Structures are given as structure tokens and as C-alpha cells.
Length: 203
Figure (cartoon, rainbow, N blue to C red):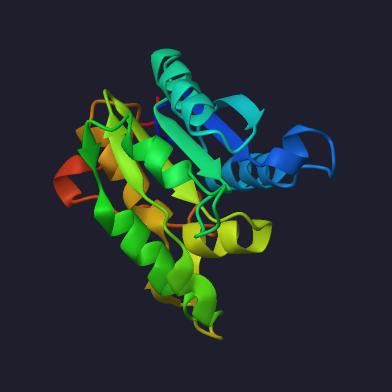
């Protein structure tokens, strides 16, 4: 069967792993591979990744986020540094570069994670918009990253709780970014009918 959709828009995505120990080589970072693998599985779009592995330093985090936005990343995902520990400063550094805060993302991530562990209430992930980029703080563990992005499913495979990524493509539409197309078997993007790109007629 011929795919009649227009070619998917190219997208530049920043992925940032924030960890003192991983950034100094004490242990191997797992955040960047987890983010890249999930996004590659979830999106039809050709993706250029901008990976960064940095320590838990607020000024460095803020500068990295600004750098990635200025480099044309429509989406920037961070992992790590969102708990209550003294060195966990990712939310503060993210809010420091924000033009708009998007609190619903953090609320939904905590709701999903609470289905698994009661300590999810300690997480402080935030999401913000800077210029034409959406920046989202994700949990630090690869399993939790996938759960918050995809949401929770019933035993029969139907969606029980929506993951946060279902809302990401339309958010990026609204701020003037590329049209992100998701693979429904991983996560199904939601858009109002008026915002769905029409299929191209077969030639």
C-alpha cells in the first residue's frame, strides 16, 4: 500500500542528561541512549539529535538549554536532577530560561509515576517554552522516561492514562515548529481535527 502522506518534516531535538557522576565518567550515562532510542521509535520524522552530557550545575544547565534553543531545536528533553536533593537543580535552571511555563506536563508525569512508586511525589519536573522551543524535564531512569512519555496501558493494550508526548506535537504546532508525526504503536499524538495535516493524494 502506497503511503500518500507528505514527507515528514525534519526536526532538530536536543537531549540533555544531567548528572555529576556520569559527566565525569564515574558511571556510563543511560539517559541519552534511552531518549534517542525512544524518540527514534516514536517519530516518523527524520531527526537530528543534539546530545549533551553535563553536571548538576544550574548555570551550565541554563546555558545549555539556551544554546540548544538558539541552535534550532524545536524540542529539548532533559533527564536527571529533578528530585529534592541539594544538587538537583534542573527545574530551577529550566524555569530561569522560560518565556512561558507549561505546568500540565509536570502534573501528568507525576500522576503517571505515582501509579508505580509513592516517591514520585518528590519529583519536580517542569516544562517551559522558550522562543519556538518546548523544553521538558523528564525522570532520570530509562524505564520511567518511557512510562511518562507513553503513558499507561490496560492489559488489552488500550490506553489507560495518556503519556505526556501525546500533547507534544500539537504544542510544537502552536509555537510554530515542525509537524511531528508519531507512530501510533508507540504513542498516538492528539490534535484537533482542524490541525491534522491532510494526506497527499496519490500521484
